[in-house]
Length: 279
Image (cartoon, rainbow, N blue to C red; front, side, top):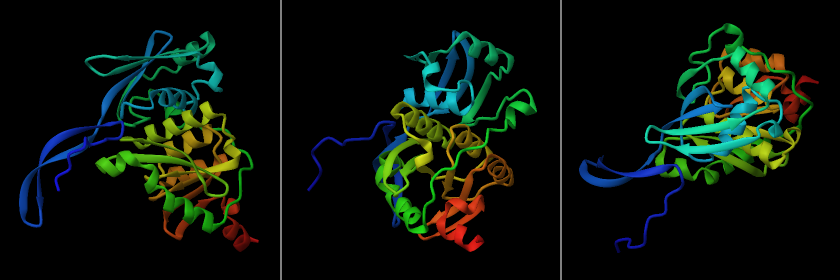
């Protein structure tokens, strides 16, 4: 029977009519498409950056970006988040202490990023390769916990299930329970949203681990370490610079995490079986 009830879509997507070819048959179909809009970050009335992102969980994005880029040190330094939806896109008007705003002026980037790009437009190498502080002790987990967490990823990604176009960043407790998950067309944005959500929830980042459905670029390690995250698990490979950053920051970096398999590239002591192998 044809479906007569209204289609319920997750936030962050729109419907578009497409032509689909399947099994040699071409037909018109209604498809779910992930949204991507320019989002401007304005701190204390001064433009800072424009990113392309999925326009939901914006409060999490604003706070997480501010923390992961070391623009502020703590969530309570972000005093206000006003969302203004304009014809051209979305403007996030943010208020931070005057000293923070002055520091931003000194390191002004004014970058117009591609999807989730955290580097385009950085004016000096120090901005691009900012070394995060070393992280804390963090948890130790075993391979079964990691495999169980990977198996739970799909259920927490309604936007990607609907569109097939988004990345996810997920936070699991040390027992492998899914605590928080955020999605976005940009992998950096998904991580920033998760960092913001963790900060808003008052989560202890030493009591869980991060899983991302993307490669582990150095920016992902940089953002995670800046947020104090000790264990980063990626579905795909890391880059050489990501491994270097992880080694320097004390972050356990896991790549190619699929099913029961994974590769540990830095600080294996937080994966129980790897620590035993080293002993």
